[in-house]
Image 1: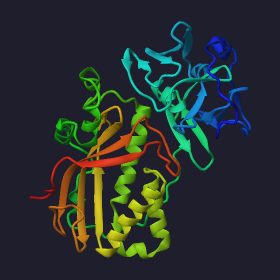
Image 2 (image 1 turned 180 degrees about the vertical axis):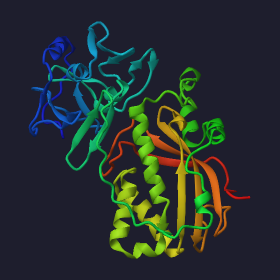
Image 3 (image 1 turned 90 degrees about the vertical axis):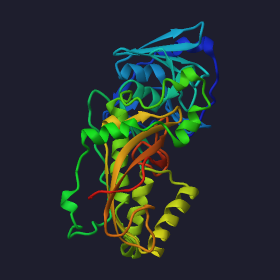
Image 4 (image 1 turned 30 degrees about the horizontal axis):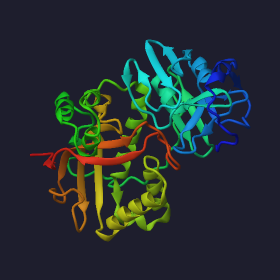
Length: 368
């Protein structure tokens, strides 16, 4: 929703922003697009809007905090809101995109600002920092917030037809979950790739707050990342001959978009990838095994998840995984990077945006 009014930085009027109480409405909304636990939220005379620079959804701070069970105080001398809930304290200064969470600085895409005498803040950052799960309904332009253990209703995903229905050689012997040895090995890799380049931009004290700390994400932030991995697994399974079907190709592309961003560059990358599969007549079966203990904040710019990729390429003029051969099971360790703060874009349904992947190891034969 585009902003339809003029936002004015009037710090002297900040106290007025703390008067309106939030109301839960049962009918269809006409002036806002936010739901809390499947019920529409009425923000009164200040509706949410999209930040003109970043596209992030901005919502009234006090109304949202009250709905989520938090308290809000205002430090007028510092133009800073103080939000507290269940042991979490957030300091958000108007005009800054570097809030302080439990004493540690972090970043958010859009700064807190004042609009119509209300403190407006990024919906996803505030909600997730207070332990909620946020999902973006792109079809209906609704931001869904889930709190207090409410489980979101997952959208029905259309998946490409299964391939190799008869099973591949020794497929029944492939592991279905990680061992403790797998998890320990995956956790031991250092930060690398784009994340390490991002970290180098920051002083040592900031760098020390990132890296391979696998305990900082709450469940609501881990859920969409784990969901994205299951979608990655689905796009790892394909049969070049089935792309002759327009329906199969469209379903495959839409699956990619659910973890990617729908734009001309993404379209070019995805369609180029499919064309390469068809040109080289590649058929592949793959499994991605991971765990909530393999998700971490690699750098201010990237969240990451590590996984063991087990794969079998049964046909193709070239190998999709360099170092492997046709007709054999292989495995390798891999890492996926996502843009942070976590959030959706047009066409994306998972709430995370895939950015890049890193091969952490070379392919190894699964069976000796």
